[in-house]
Image 1 (cartoon, rainbow, N blue to C red):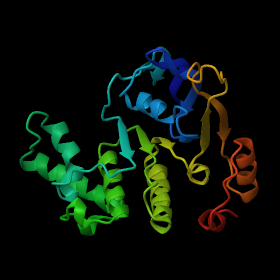
Image 2: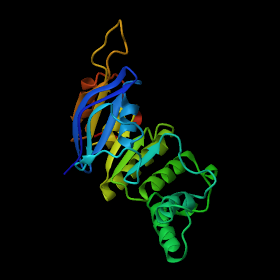
Image 3: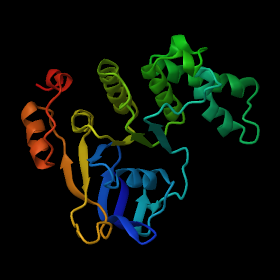
Image 4: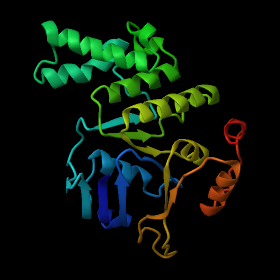
Length: 267
């Protein structure tokens, strides 16, 4: 089912075009990896999806309706830096979204509503493997555990879209592989649509069902800021073999070698 439709979208900052003439459709439940060189518009596109920025012109539709003009509960987000509340325990971090949804003015629930929120937050902590850390504060958790907490915090309201901005880039390789497995498990279980910005083409290939490659196609040496980035490749990732990865590397003109982790993962 078509969930997102983007037609002839442009984004300018002042007179400078950052994105130009983007058109694509996204079906519900797709896992879309977004790659490209630094400065090619990936972050701007991410901010448009989140609702922090608005398009200069063009159309963005979410389930047939105009795109929301600000972030909302239907779009969860996880950043590279662990975006959790440092003064709250793990359980309180996850429950916060439920508290403010149920009591927008005070953020405090009582009685059966508080118990229900507590149970739901605890279930999400269990889903990401943090049940035993419910009473710990973020500074008492490892980097991987903090990123699990950020995922739980983003998913507890059951968003239809999850936006990931290089969420695993700061993690050690072993922990990163564990997070990849967790992310795949949560995505398959809940069926939300994922957009993941990453600088690691291997990561995008291994996790995604589709890859968008951003690049500046038109370049004027006399006016380097005259043109914005476009989606130069829109690739379906149907299988995950070493040969497919090699073909993908060639397609997007990257020379990054396979890491040992990727070699172990690919058949």
